[in-house]
Length: 390
Image 1 (cartoon, rainbow, N blue to C red):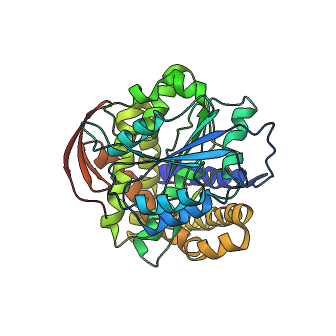
Image 2: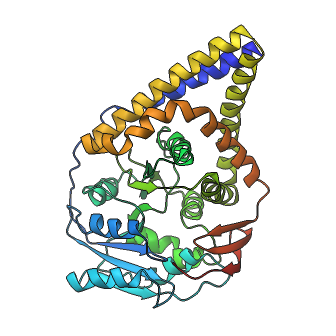
Image 3: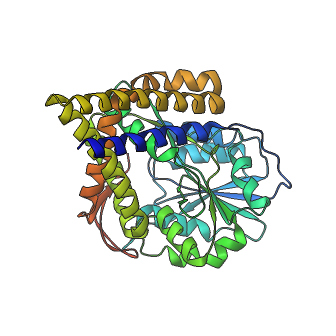
C-alpha cells in the first residue's frame, strides 16, 4: 500500500504544480486584429435572478459589434419579459425566437437549432452562451481573439463556480468543478463548453449544426465530437472563465448536474470519458487509502495524508492567485469562503467526482431544467416528462 500511496502523492504534487503553471501570465490584455460582427445565441428556459445578471453583463461588454438571438420554447416562457425589456433598449441588437416544445431531442438543442436559422451572412462569428453566467467585460474579445489569429477553429471557456450561499454541498460542488477547470489546455484534449463557445460562421455552416444536433441531448460535448471528427481544433484560453454563481440545498442538488455532465461525456466522447474516469478513480482511491490507513494506525499513511493536505492548501493558494489575477479584490471577496474551505473539502470532492462518474456509467435517464429524458444514443433522445417553467 505504501508504494501506491507514494505514487498517488506524487500525482497530487504534479496536479498542484499544474495549477500554479496555470497562473503564469494570466490576465494579460487582449488585442484584436479586427472587429467582426457577432451573433450571440442564448437558449433560455425560465426566469431566474442569474438571467438578469447575465443580461447586465452581456450588454456591458467592451465590444460593440454584436447582436443577440434569444431562443425560448414558448411565447409565455417567463424569460420573455426581461428579454423584451432589453429589446426595447436595443431594438436592432436583440432578436427573440420561439422554438416550440422539443420532440425527441433536448429542449436546449431545439432552442439552439431554431436560433441558428436566424444567423445571417452579415454575422461573421457565431457565439453560444448560457444565460446563467456572469461574463467579464472582455469576454467576447477574448473569445474571438484566437479565431482572428487563426489559432483555432472553435474557442471555448469553462465555468468558474462561485458559491453564493453557505451550504457545505455548494463548497464541495465548487471544489469538484475547480478540479476540471485548471487542467492543462491542450487542443487534443480540449472540449467545448456550451456556456461560452465561438466559431466562424463558415465553420458553423460547414459542420451543419442544425442537422448534426437533431435528436441530441447535449450541445457542447456533441459539438466536441463533431469537431474532432472534422479535424477542427478547439482552443480553451485560460482567461475565459465566466463566473457561475451556485446555491444548493444539499447534495441532492449537486448530483443531477454532475451526473448529467458525466452521462453526456460518456455518450459523446467515450474515449475521453474513460481517461477522465481513470484519473478520477485514482485520485479518489488515494484519499480513501490514506484515510483508512491513518485510521488503522499506519504511520506511512498518516505522513502521506498530512502531506496531501499540505499540497491541497498549496493548490487552493494557486486557485486564489487565479481569482486575484482575473477578478481582483472583488473576486477574492466572492471566493473567500470557498478558498478557505477548499483544501478541507478536497477529499470528499475527489471521492464524489469518482462515485458520480461510475454511477453515470449505468444511467440512461437524466432530468434537465424540469424535463426528464431517456438517452438511447448520441442522436436518440426521448422526452419522458416535463414540468412548467418557473
